[in-house]
Image (tube, rainbow over all chains, first blue to last red; front, side):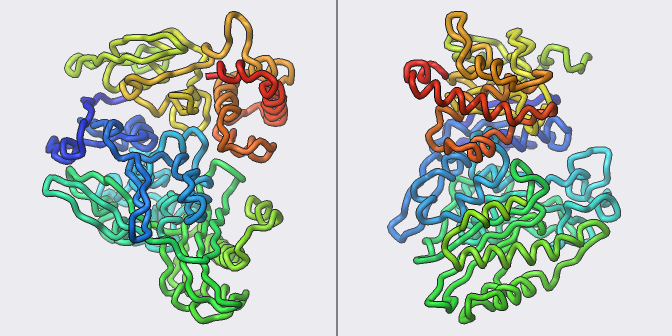
Length: 337
Length: 181
């Protein structure tokens, strides 16, 4: 493995004021070390931020939940506030990776994880995300796992996170600390679409550090579900996933939140489909219509066309379960098929 | 320059080494390690503890699983220097006073392996999940919690049996459970 200098940050200010070039922060290390070993990421300086006081989960007076950047995926999934008020996030977290990786991975690290596109991970392949202007071997290569939403001529790599799909369906704000102080960014705006610049993946500037993610106040009386469809029942990335929240008044939908994973270049909030659900009866017809709206701009390449009907079914089933407000055992089995 | 799997971790002269103080299998240790030395490589090459296995080296197989402060982690994705002040337990730390840990004994008795390469990682995940109250006790929960440990021989059925048999035994012996790291 290539060499780098290692140091520990002892305060957020200290970390955010690093002006050294090619610096990478390390928290869990599950993405960073993986990609350094592959020679995809090449930091000259690695700054360990694990000693920073960013491990709290705190309910704010306005009902929102502030999650420290270093809270592990395991601890967040099992946190009482998350389990009772944001079960869709707990489900999404536990659907991701493995026990070991969730024990290591942090909340901000999960947001910052890189795509699993095999061409991105292979320095011998052409990849505009890894090496701007070099081309994209996924376009006409083996693109079964690639995105059908949010892609461009330059890149169709999927954002791999489950957690981020749950957060997208909740709504959140990121707190960033940089050399010039603190700023906040809407979670929906943090990840960038690839466009002509797939190497610019997010809104984080040099020297900036994510210090917290604050979830919007929970939807009162919402039913929710995170449905993940994949090649094997556990420890596998999504082919398609859906996070859904519904608030019902009788059979009428009062509020809807919908986000997709596994099919898009960033965590994919389906705002148009949400708007189309409000005021409708919570039934299959409404859910199918919402799914069609969510996928109306989907574009497939040679091997990933199956993702469009798969995502459509994921939306319909996640909404159905959210409307039920519970998850019958048969559905759990079905979701693992 | 020797980059083979069997070489000792390369210590770049320009970057020097860093002092690492941690507890390994209950013993306080002080080591000089390269800043880019991965915990797995330090355990195997620098400390001669070959029980922890290198499978994929990318967090995909679980053969390298150890406990860090009691939690199962992939030692291939952790810098050794990140373990400063922490308690690391490897498969070599499971047996006590020459007596196998119940999980080890039950892996033997249940025939929970063929080639054995994934077995240390499987047993480290198993001992961690038996001590974790957040993980359900039914077979489905055990399978889910163990899914980060791949077994190409396909010994999964017997692995679940060994874990559940250990759970039943450990339930009668809380002292032993505490000692399970």
